[in-house]
Image (cartoon, rainbow, N blue to C red; front, side, top):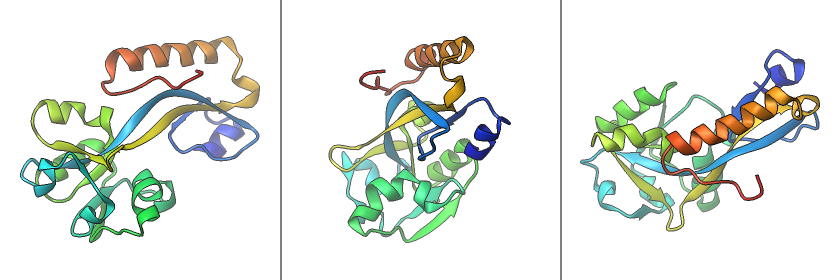
Length: 175
């Protein structure tokens, strides 16, 4: 999506994976915790948090993107030289949640994306490490467009609505 943004095919990209590009400005929306979704029957469901090696016997369900762009690897597993037993991909969060609920694997997803599944007791979430893994979600825009009134209005409205409707998100200091 970033090349399409720079070309002008898109006006904005929402991402938690900012990449160096002098033509792109990243406007922080909010911080969220990346958590491990597990089935209610999983032995991991009783844990307050897990360590990287706790996933060694699990199938990790991820989005079909490069490993280097997945926070579960870059911020949690890779620093500990840990690997899941297997990796399976699913393109949509509802499909991932259904696979997890059915005991077909575990998935590291934003806490706010799992609220409806945990509220309906379909699955459980567990913190990644004792302190958790916190990430920031950004609106990426072209540098020359970031001060335009419509872009500023979108950014402010998006932040306001996210804090009203998403559970577990935090403000980014200084934004």
